[in-house]
Length: 199
Image 1 (tube, rainbow, N blue to C red):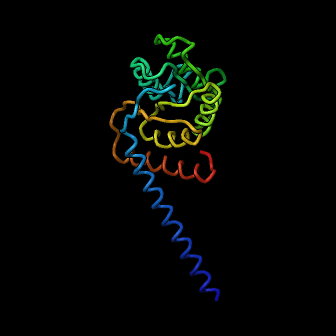
Image 2 (cartoon, rainbow, N blue to C red):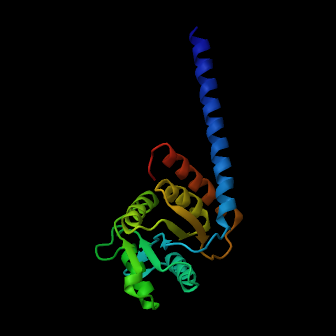
């Protein structure tokens, strides 16, 4: 009897792990498809997801996101820009604040920029940005980030009740293994979020 029980438990574990692998592979494929799709069109706001900042200056990745958002703004696709991201341990600067300063330096009027400067993760950024947008009566958003990040961010913003269009920043090609790894990491993060685990 004991042996049968162990065999049954092992079968359940293998089935569950197999289903988990299939789920990750399926979502990773969806992430890959979304990663190169530019859906930018008229919206209420352009949301730039934060990335690292160094002593008040955006990292190259963050700057590329901000530059892409600027291009969309200058095309007249939205009248507002929103930057996100907390301090990440920096005692002086936040990603959201650094993004705002960068955009102002590029000629964007300060009143056209909304800042979320407390979030420490994508889950927090999208939730807080969604709350700000609802308070402001904003219903549609173009989300700007790296390609592999767009799928997860879109789903989280959809969860906040927003109409979302993805627009990945331009970036240099990466080795295929690195791109695949990014898709898998984002797939795992998305599936954990779906089960209530924030990453």
